[in-house]
Length: 120
Image (tube, rainbow, N blue to C red; front, side, top):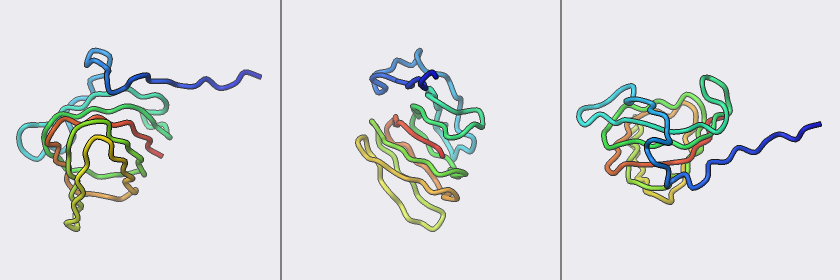
């Protein structure tokens, strides 16, 4: 029996843009500038879960709706998430967050962010 392979993304924060896939603009931008996203998946993706990978996003604001629970560890940048109920959390590089399924609100990226994530 063959053991499953371990997926590794070494030194994720140091990846050059050319090493990432261009994931396009955010789906529901709120004004200018419009955030662009890029990243790499380690497993899952394309509707297969769990999905895990590395994600980068440029400055901007957008509507955010979390369909599935997501664990994130932010490596760099600064942003704020404001729920539809008005609760705001500030996130910076080094912070870890859990977004429950059904969370919705606004994301404001003030300084480009990078994170590793797992979507269940």
